[in-house]
Image (tube, helix red, strand yellow):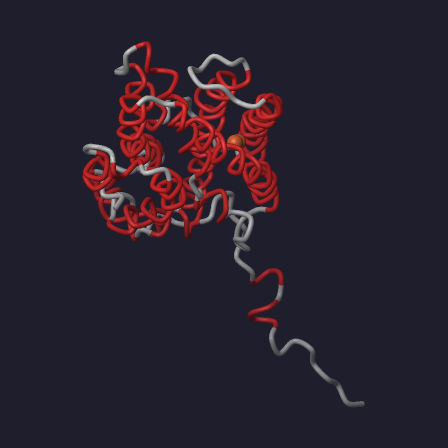
Length: 295
Ligand SMILES: [Fe+2]
Ligand SMILES: [Fe+2]
């Protein structure tokens, strides 16, 4: 009897031959494919990607609770020197609910992945949040709220390559994809909201206020999007890489010209909103964007 084998493509298509899905896309974190990491074997590479997920999710949780929600509350409660339509303030209340959910889901994901993988997360203040706090603290009390608003508008209107890249990455675990997909859907609404917040606020600002917020925006963009070197270094050190190896991996795979190019791409939309209002024509503003390498 003739036998027809259906196993001609077994070596490439069988389940057992497929690489195990990861908790964070390696293509969004090239350090995972550094030769020094690969030399330590799959278990260490996997743990490094898990730790990157923890870093990303804990940054997200803190961003929502310490930056976006305080700004949204300023809008909702009418605590800024600008007026917003009542319907906009009501939508701000819905964003407070969304962002609280995003923070809770981020913390829940960390707890679930800890249980599944046995890889522990270590509490660490994300550097972008520390930089944001310093940037706001340096402002006078009268301008602080508007600078918070400018940073909120930037963070809510930039296109995060991580948030948009995870759901479409076939090598990432479904639970992480779903987390990023649901968050991304909510954020599309927030993006539209905050671009309109900028349009409503701008005509109500004095020339001096416009200048201050336009100078804060580029500094925040790089602070917010630059890779969190202390956190990534901490992850590498905790996995047994030496200080020299850690510095080498960071220099060759984290703080690279490609990283800066990615930051520029992410912020083009946000810059466009400010540019459309004439912000780049204000004294020193175009130079400030250029100094940060964003134009
Ligand atoms: Fe969010
Ligand atoms: Fe948001």
